[in-house]
Length: 192
Image (tube, rainbow, N blue to C red; front, side, top):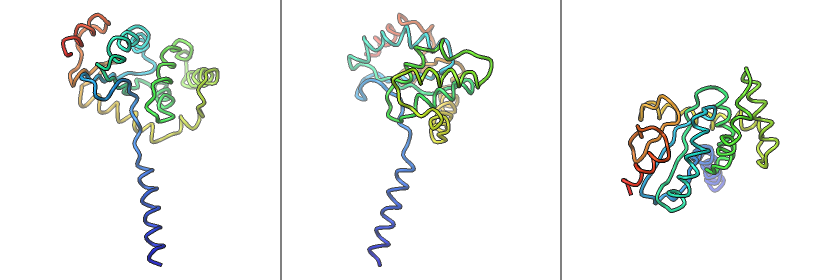
């Protein structure tokens, strides 16, 4: 009888550990990189999409791929559509940035319409036409992921006084210059 009770507690313990598993942040680069960057962004933000299209590829080639920079993409949704898209980006909970980049690359295809339903339908169609196999409704209804996204937003506002997107935090300090690759490169090179 005691063995059965111990086994039961062991199984319950494993289940509760699994239930408390955290959402894996979306990151790129080596954890051992000298420079750590956090990017607070909203998936409906045009400036964030521009960052992903024009600045990020250069960062990847010149800093991330060379082991100099680790970047973490954090959520700062500015509206319900951005919250829903962030849930999609985190849906597989694998820390992979492919869906996030895909959503920003195709920003103009889904961030249009006059209602949240329009935007959700555009997002759903975009994903259906992609190579990603995500269950749209399951992703949208994942409360754990939603809590993680909202916690990112709260932490950004409280800890780093984030008010707009994109906001970059580099080695614990807010990047205050105009967000161009030239300005960012010069700043990062001083930290190497």
